[in-house]
Length: 606
Image (cartoon, rainbow, N blue to C red):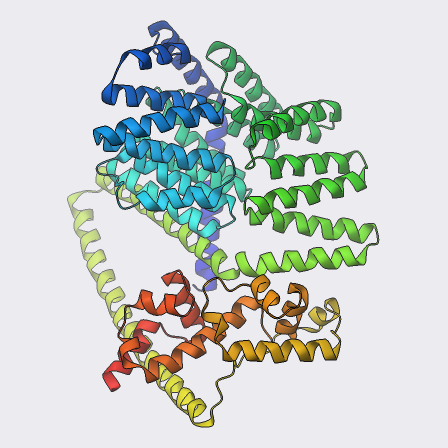
């Protein structure tokens, strides 16, 4: 993309966000009025079934009806008492399995994943989702499909895998818009609101929050109203309107009295957010009061998912009251809590803050420790490729929205003559684009052939000389050298010798290979090993492992015809890659072409 194109896209996004956010702020009061009307309607018609009513019904029915009621009870207890929710869900699952009631089985499996999610067990939650992905389609089970995809996006967001979170949310929104299913639309906007909230893009988060709330109200579903009001309050505060945020929480408390208590899971985050707002208003006693209530609920119910952020707010409160030592302790506890649930974005941000705090308190060893941690997380998770992918996904969505609006205007306003002009213009544009694509394809094809031939020549030269060592460019800057004091030469020599032996044994094709595992094998610590790899190999750990794997693979592909004709997924797993996309990216980064192209050319030559 050239400079002028970048400027155009940037201006378009900013203009769209400013206009849309103004409309949203003007309409928030209208949403609250609609919620009040919905609550009044439910109360008049007695549509909301209390827990006691559902419990009585469950005791007097059988079959699918009983399974559905038990699933409702699980939903109502999810935010009140997780153990009771699990018991109801397990009973519903067993009944559904006995009856071969697939919709009941799917919903019960989703409840298992969701309960694991709110307790911070993201990996096990994702395992449940992946086990059902092929069985739950949006055509047969649209609501359960939407629930699973939203939860998947939320897990990626909490783990700091922002590109995957955005891609999942946008894919779900595409399905929702194509099917015009209001439930899927509400869930897609909920996933995107969560994503933008975590990235601190509060205007976009509020935009998606209100869009999702609109569909929730249309469906007359009160189950998610409390969360939405809390999100509106939190985002209003982040956008600088603290008064509007507190008014939203007043509405929340009023709604709680008129409808029902949402449960400790929701209340814990509401109290946490209220503490954050009062802290920003410098009402520290009120802030401490609500934060203590939130932490009590989080700890007594083991809401591990909530704990890192609650501890961050506590640390910020200590800093506001000039208690630096307790602030440092709270930030370190927040990192520990984040490590327990693999919330790497929290670790990254907190380690950066701790670097500054320890610098102020004159503890250089601690500064170095947290700099190492911060750099490791940054290098492994938050790289430029992911940021570029996020920009591409967001831009594509903007272009799609713009195209949709343009098409609607054309359908209403254009005459037959303008339609004909548009068709001619489209055909000309198509031909121009087609010509451009053909030219680009030919250039890329020629470039790939050159890269392939160069790769083969280098590989044959290496085989003749017997040199299969990793060749990487040293990219350690002078500033990085100063932050990593030189190791003792004897220690460095020992580590390098041991490392060379392990390279000869192809340790790197183990998919579980990581810095800690390798340091244990070498009988050293991860910091020393990382420093040796950075300085002597001129690379970070991940790039070093990828170099070893790709070099090993090239030789094997050249020499073993049966191996190179195996499935690409098998080839990837045989050299340590569990994910085919990761393998493709690593190979292309190293060689400049995809492995499938390399293998195809190799087979054609042979």
